[in-house]
Amino acid sequence: MKLAKRMNRLGTETAFEVLAKAQKLEAQGKNVIHLEIGEPDFNTPENIISAGQNALSNGFTSYNPSPGYGDLRDVIANEINTSRGINVSGENVIVTPGGKPIMFFVMLALIESGDEVLYPNPGFPIYESMIEFCGGTAVPMKLHGDRDFNIDIEEVRSQITSKTKLMIINSPNNPCGSILGDSELEQLANIAKENNILVLSDEIYSRFLFEGEHNSITTFPDMLSRTIILDGFSKTYAMTGWRIGYAAGDKEIIKAIAKIQSQSTTNPSSISQAAAVEALNGKQDFIQIRSKAFQERRDFVVNSLNAIEGIECIKPDGAFYVFPSCKGMMGKKDKNGNKINNDFDFVQSLLENNGVAVVQGSAFGLEGFFRISYATSMDKLKDAMGRIKNFCESLS
Image 1: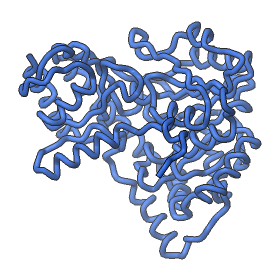
Image 2: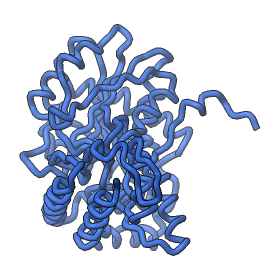
Image 3: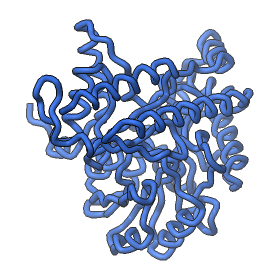
Image 4: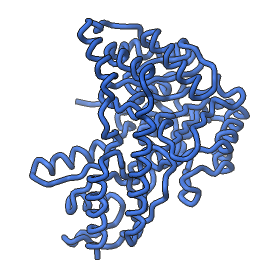
């Protein structure tokens, strides 16, 4: 079978490749600690589960409007207005089966061949993949390690050309956990307005901030009309398998996304939408409790990693990832005599020899690093940090 050439432009999400290899090793009897997938280890709250079960029991299983049910869109709009201090209505919202379709649909709706799209690097690998698959030119917007994985505004400004159509920002960031402060957001907003650039603001981790409060680029003058907010329920409400996300933006782009959705995924799950309404209307106190647990895990992991010779780890401000450097391990050999030439070799050897699954930094656009998701229990993290320490000390 001859596939379309565009398939060569479509990348993969490496975390799931690592997961598959780890599961294969587990099937062979190896004990593996999973730190590769960005999935909360907490369960979906019971009230949300009950809402989904009731929807199923009551026959709430039919097709629904492509943008999602009106009551959910209104509840989402209210949440956005409350949390961001802006003013949108349900007509500014579309509900999708997870966050990834939003990235894809936005690219399909906006990007022509040759259009340039800035995206954070290191960053979620699907950004670059979707840009190139849809015919755009992916322009990496570098996050500098010596700036706690933040941008250099003047560098960003120098990357803008007459072909720049869209800028993607992600705060808190995956994989670094870094955030864009008010100053950076304001300057990026000015760049967008001065050059007539649209913004896709991925705010999926906005409820997991350990310092200060989340601010959205939409709060700056004239930015609401040129920004698409991406958010969802997977991370905050531990609903990864429910596949329910949403976008908010100008009515024109929302209608365009809805048109694409109507001819692809048709509509989001009616059952998941019923659960999502309860998620936003129900108690929210558990979020702070879970955020505090993530903060405690972050502190433990960062301190443990920085105590290992050859590993350096910046303390992130949000999300549930750390992105340490393993450059100090390059050139060494593992106990089997295999040389560690790059971050891929490092994570492969760590998995095969010590049973810890992490993701190489090059998968996110930056070699010499690796990503750890600390969205797992403290007991498993303690075990994992011990294994990583033993592995690094075994290299010679």
